[in-house]
Image (spheres, helix red, strand yellow):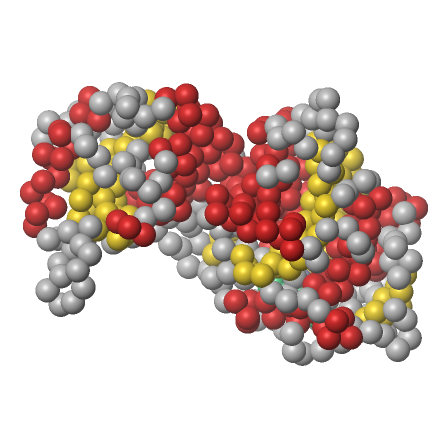
Length: 504
Ligand code: BES
Ligand code: MN
Ligand code: ZN
């Protein structure tokens, strides 16, 4: 995975021997209008760094825009070989999220330039506590370090080998150390998810996804089971199996268990993920354009696996069970057909209108199974609908819930994770659209409101359990590289799910 060594130090910036010392700056100009020039200010009180950067800051060449960078070689008075100034944008708007991005931008600046050792000065920002900044900074550095070029035969490892966060001695050192250690776990878990999502369908079948989850579980001390065809039949998972039946690859029902010692009552959180390792659409075959992207149709499942990794290492005092339903959706002589009727594990009958609406089918049985395993609260994540991408673009992921209190907890978690989810509606009128003439429900609700009708379908299987559904179709894959994250798998939802779990 990542081989980045991370450390926190309370040494003076001037004395840090490093290839590159990054310092953050914000724009303090509050006036508006054509004459209002940016007023970049370094977010450190270190006199040596202030002096080294004074001339360039005064020059007006650097505006401290978000993730803007400016490099100085051989900065006077510093042991560092280079000084990199990274912008945070407007000072009053700077958040822990801006720090996360800026740290990522510093690492991504270093990578292609052969710089393997980066130090970052923890920014002194009134509105963001040092501990929050420290956690965000190391998360951002780890996330920034990841690149998806795994299968290049001439791949050169450009990863930054050593990342040092330098904080002032005046900070609460114990609090910073704890937050920093947390950030390492979270950043690495997000990258763990991204590695899985990046794998193509031929390299990551449902079986292999199961193996990867099991290896991870053994490493971090989670309970685990990986089942296949027989167990699906035994549990009468007719909806899950109906997707898998058209593929030569057997399905994998992946169960991960986190049971902290001494916690025998209270909630059990059920994390359910869509793990379609390739979605061709099945008999309702997708058009060829962009079909290759459907290797990332297991991103919801991978997010749950990454979140379980972080949970195992951060040890919250609440029981959690992860259920990932992995299958390949393929057209074949044995594949299910539009018009078929399937009986889900819960007993509900489902009329298949479109075999490309397969995610909700595997999740239906995943939700029922998580409830059977004792889940008192459910959260699922899935690259579920193109309609959600149409509605929210690649800016916000969609969120749904049958319980305001449970959603509010998730909303609070977003404040810490910095991820963007927008709550979309459920309702009787949407439920109306998925009623079937021949059975209980059908698996599509027509052209309009597709994200909400898909969520209504899942709600049937959450039954009366408080439940959240996350539709991450638009955010699981970053389409263009950004200064702080590579183009490719994003690892979205890992951080938010983790914080939601920790809020119990
Ligand atoms: N995996 C797709 C959804 C998707 C679309 C993910 C774009 C990522 C990017 C899902 O299985 C699907 O095919 N959904 C259909 C549902 C429709 C047939 C009701 C869709 O959104 O078109
Ligand atoms: Mn599909
Ligand atoms: Zn799909």
